[in-house]
Length: 124
Image (cartoon, rainbow, N blue to C red; front, top):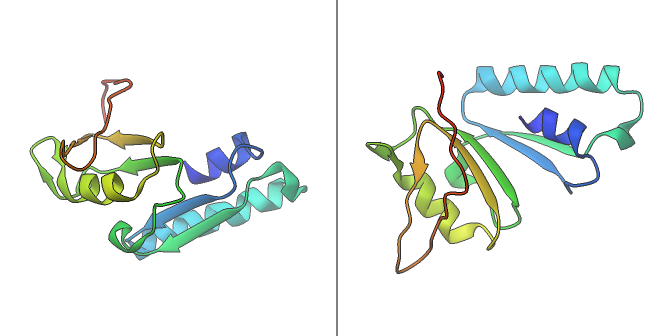
């Protein structure tokens, strides 16, 4: 998703950042970035890309405008992402967009609110 966003919207994003906790998946992303850069001769056709190895809990989301989460194994209470909801709710600027796979964010009315803008159902 990070590489696609950088390629599809180079003028829209200041930076496209990926955060992956699994070293193997992080390395696959780094290898894919190298292949993409080899095919795209002009770096101005890509938004800046940064791929981080680490946990989302340690990442600063205060500047994020779009967050995509493949969250099938993340801490949750049934269909609700608990830890991620608190992290994003406290850090994301108003108006930021979040795309999640498999689970939803949870509003904490006294602190932050998420608004569901759309939903797609299908096989994972």
